[in-house]
Length: 251
Image 1 (spheres, rainbow, N blue to C red):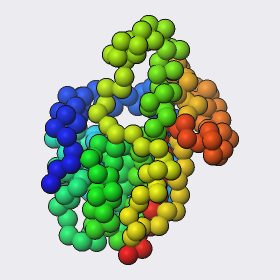
Image 2 (tube, helix red, strand yellow):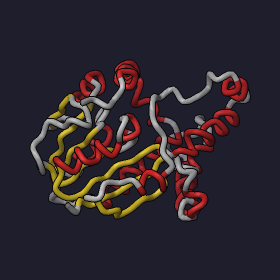
Image 3 (cartoon, rainbow, N blue to C red):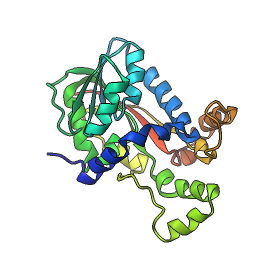
């Protein structure tokens, strides 16, 4: 069974060579920082880790440099080739997230950061597959429904008024093939054999920063600090562009 569409596989094959350029923008610089801090917080130092949807190895490298034993998995051959060049001493496996080629309870922690679960037809089936190969903890992120359906259009229009016309004509939508879930609805349908440890919004204020902001600008840090204030508010939290979720396996 492969619940990841051919469109998604083709998309990542095509963008692989330019994928890392996304993380040069202020929004993604802030997101990268926040995600890594949260991963660091919730991983036990003795864990072996499976990085599902590892892409070009952004999080894989981070985990490797922290001293963890890591295996990276992605469905895109092109992305994995780049990951292999970036991260030495790590096994990378081409596989679908819903059919992981590992025996039961092979890993202490399963990490899937930045949207892998939004690229599958049934994210809950994939979470069950994560549970099968993992002993203790699942750490993953999903795209924010409001951010990607509404706020990104607003910020695109702020950066360039011509984008208003593009969206009106139906040509300015997100190009990434993905499913978007309201966070509360997503969490209500989790499998029974996991327990929610944390659910936090990430990256709202940085979405407003123009792409001309330098990667070391204090504006990025300020936007992160604003996020820490505003994303604690239940109503505002729903506007985050990424939701970071930590689950413990209980059965």
